[in-house]
Structures are given as C-alpha cells and as structure tokens.
Image 1: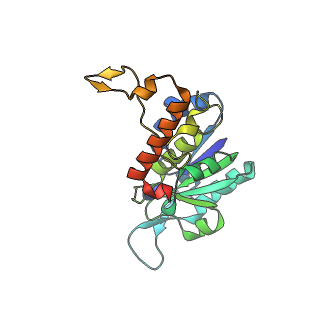
Image 2: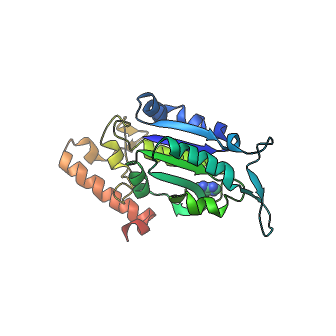
Image 3: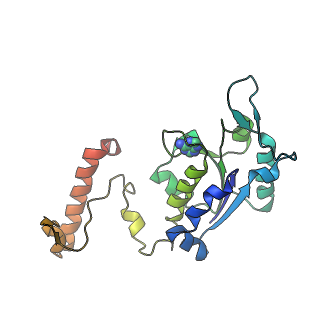
Length: 224
Ligand code: ADE
C-alpha cells in the first residue's frame, strides 16, 4: 500500500511513523508513506496556501489551487483509489471503514487546517471525508496519523500474530474481553481460574461471554 499525505505541517507527522509497528511495516516494505508539504505548491513567494472567506466571516480557508496542483501531480504519476479529507464534519472513522481502506492500493490523505478547504476541493477531488471523533483538532494531521495507524496494522504481514488484528475490540462489533498475564496471583488478586485450566473450548466460551457482558455495559449501541 502507498499513502500520500498532503499537509502544511509535515513535521507533525514524522514521529508516528518512526516507532514500533508502523516503523516496521515501512521497513518491511508493506507500506510506503510520502509526505507532501502543501506550501511547496503555493503560487506566490510567501508560500501562501490560505485566504479570507468570500462573504466574510472569521477564519482562513485553504485555497483550491495549491491543493489542485499537488493532487493533480500525484494523480499524473499513478492511479489513486481514494482521496480522503480529514475534517470534523466527515463520517466518523470506525473499524469497518478502516478494514475497507486497508484493501486499497494507493490513497491520498488531505489534512485540513484553519476553517478547512475551499468547497470546490471537496466537490472535485475528495472521495471520502473522515472525522476521528466529535471534537475539533487544530488540524487534520493527528486524524491522518490515527487513520494510518489503524489501517496499516491491518495490512497482511504487519502484525506478527496474524490472528491478533481479528480479535481486537470492534472487529466483530464486540469489545475485547479482559486479559491477564503472569503472575497468576498478585497481592491476592487472582486471574480467573478458567484461564489457567488449559481447556480451550471453555476459555473461548468464557471470553465470548465476557466480551458480550462488557459490550452490554459500556457500549450497548454496538449490540443494536
Ligand atoms: N480536523 C479537525 N478536527 C478533526 C477531527 N475531529 N477529525 C479529523 N480531522 C479533523
């Protein structure tokens, strides 16, 4: 998979790709990340990429031309399956959307700033608008990092244990059951007996019950 990220703050998006799972996925050649500084596509010497709103109102708007130049250059080099815009008024990202995006070959992620982008960018380039939650960030970069993380970990070969992404919370609309590791008793706090029994079938049933119980309590909306 190849991910091209268009941003005015490429430095904000460095560290997520320099550690742990994402770093290893890049090193293994399972994903390529390419950062594009939108200011390099500005058409004046001040590298201006935003301007005042037509009709008045507080806050700057990201201009159509630099974004057009950047996206058009990328599209002239290869085909893209999706051009995703990170914005608080997008569809809220969930596991199902992450699963879908993880099957794509090449995607572009555009990070919004200020008031957002000129509507014509959304009308003519964007195939999907995503939010990472009902709160406003100062830009789309952290949202893009979240999206990349959740998608990249789903790519075949990224997680060591091939089954572990499948047992994550949300993967089957249930939260994950409680988990434990050694020691089996600490300060008198015991690990549930069943997990030490070695009885695979019963453990599986217990985990399913716990997952349903936890989901009922914390996220009943997932069971509807
Ligand atoms: N940009 C600003 N807020 C955002 C959010 N909640 N999700 C995605 N991009 C954003």
